[in-house]
Amino acid sequence: MGDRIEIPFRDDMRHLAMLGLKTATTRRKKYGEPGDWFELTGLSTLYKAAETRRYELVSVEQMLLWKVRDFHFKEEGFASEDDFRKVWLEIHPSAGFQANWKVWFHVFKEVEIEQPDDAEHDHHYDGPSEEELRREAEEQERLDAGMDGGRYL
Image (cartoon, rainbow, N blue to C red; front, side):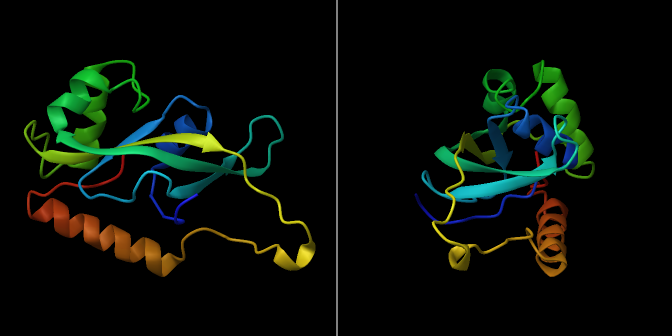
């Protein structure tokens, strides 16, 4: 397996991924390479407790935004092209939906979290720090301000 990466998700998109209804995410920047992995933590509806799942990138491809909307909206967790576009506009209110933007389409799959053989190798990870989240949000705002879009889907 590749490197651990961080890909921020809105709560609703995280939930769709953890339900297996979202298997891809489109971003203005490339977050990793095939084989890289990330974890998402959300509320388990079965156990009513926090649950962490691991996902591995299986492909990362640059394409035009309209192609994602027209051909990959289901992998993004949407029922229609229009639903994808509406959420994109919510996330990018100032930049809008620029059909010819070059974006990165990241496809992922859930994988098993390997359990350590003994407790001394058990390192707990609480997700990105507040500072990391703040830096990511600032970077996304800079990208949006420059008509470079990039918030999270």
